[in-house]
Each structure stands twice: as C-alpha cells, then as structure tokens.
Length: 153
Image 1 (tube, one colour):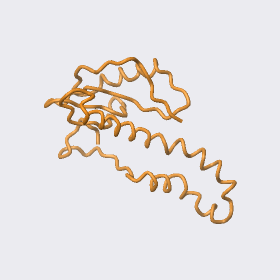
Image 2 (cartoon, rainbow, N blue to C red):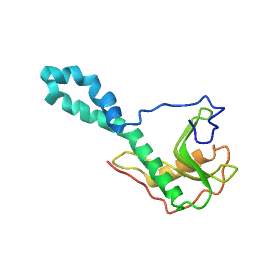
Image 3 (tube, rainbow, N blue to C red):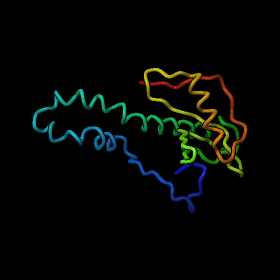
Image 4 (cartoon, rainbow, N blue to C red):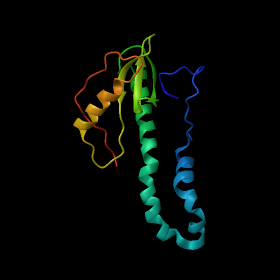
C-alpha cells in the first residue's frame, strides 16, 4: 500500500511474493518449465535471460527501500522517521519507488527512485523526481544531496 496511507482505511494494496527465489521461479522459470523438462533448456536459456531484467526491477526497488529503512533506523536520515515505502496515485498517475516519512504529521523527508538499467540520465531522473514529489500529500523539506544515481546491472 502507499506509505502515505493508513493501514486501517486504505483499499489500495499490491501483494508481492516475499521470497526472491520463489518469485524468480514463478515469474521467470515456471512459464518454461515444460520446455526445459522436454530438453529445450539450452534453447530456452536466452529467453530466460531476457526475462531477468523484468524480474529484477521490482526486486531492486525493494532492496533500495530496505537499505533506506536501515539508514533511517541508524539515524542517518535524521530523527523521527516513521515510515519508508513506495507511493503511488492514480490521478495524476505517479509512482515513487521510495518515500521516507517523518514526524507526527508523516511529512515526506526523502524521496528516491531505484533504476535497474545499464544507463540512467541523472539530470532527467532528478527533474522527474522533483515533479513526482510535488504530488505527495504532505511534503516537508526534502533532503538535498548531490545528484547521483544508483545504477546496477
């Protein structure tokens, strides 16, 4: 569910498989299991490799959120961080990979995007992130740092 919403009142939830191995198996390997068992393993392997990027995007985003949670717990994001998670809204359609909320008002303290790609334009990413952050219901001072990108592939 979006990090800005109440557990008791929201109906907006997305369920994900917590186990990375099980999620990999079900999304990447299982669709080709019969062909692999029929002996087409070697010819199916490039198709599995091409599916890996689709699978890794969401897993990379969750790893990013977990890292931000550890930073918040260690006090690296300042005091009073009360939640870290994804945020999305339908009108206008916006999705933020990570938002850290702070204080009793649960105001956004940090927003971030995690990209699983060979190359990412840091300038374009920062501008898009600033536009998306404006859609947050409660926007506090967003921590500023030098524009950088976590890019892994």
